[in-house]
Length: 374
Image 1 (tube, rainbow, N blue to C red):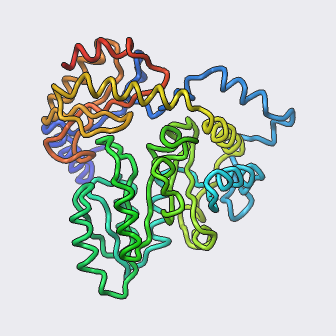
Image 2 (image 1 turned 135 degrees about the vertical axis):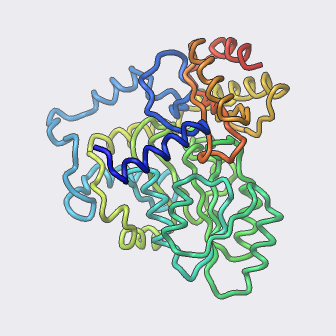
Image 3 (image 1 turned 180 degrees about the horizontal axis):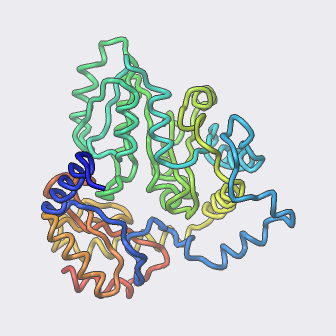
């Protein structure tokens, strides 16, 4: 039924299509998947999945596919306590589990930050951080991506106030695949007495000796006030978590709206997350292989593309939306599952193919890709 509302939406959709920014939900595809966040190959590991199901008790009905309530009512299954205990033991900090990474960032930031505070946010931070910043109603000052000179200048400008200062950054950035200068950020956090939040969504599982993330790799876990991680990427599960000081975690339980007003995760999902979190810490071979594979692909393509990545996320930046769409289609026809990433997800004129590598791939899997895009 047509009316002034639907007509307006249709008009705006036509404009998005004209500039190559209209999105559609893709059909399931077959081929070498370079779009998945299954960085360790856990989601494709049938033996590991079988092993998990063999651990479930005979009273399988206690692991229903829903929890029926929020955690603060009747949804706080015993599996939550066990998982958070294991996470806390690994990080040596208090932990809290959430229903998703988006829930984490859009809930944590407005719970901790008030309208009289100031947030210093990397310009390329994920949309969930951007939305969390907006919901906090705080003053948000964006610093140039990874630019510590600019961040210092901004901190100096606002440090004379009595406002609380927060620095928020990703550790591995989701679209460029580069890493934050974490140790420099930690030094500035200490110098200017800031509260530091680091989103490790794309680093948990793949970085650090035990896979605890980039903060572990940089020996900075104890220096970061709140680390946010996810189960939905390298750990092939669902949900997210954070680790921090006990007082901070208890404050989140009392003030974090996306925790208080969200149905808890199903017990079977929590159990899987715990099973994989503990398995992941010993996956040294997978992390080493993924690092070698990443270096190989970056080295093979850096003469053709300017690649900012220092991780398993490797963007092929082509600029125009139409070129990115055409390249994705060409790769699909050659057996590679890729998608064009376009504005507003990335800045204008930086449309790209975002390659996400997985430890289940080999160099041979990438040969035709390298040939096709070189």
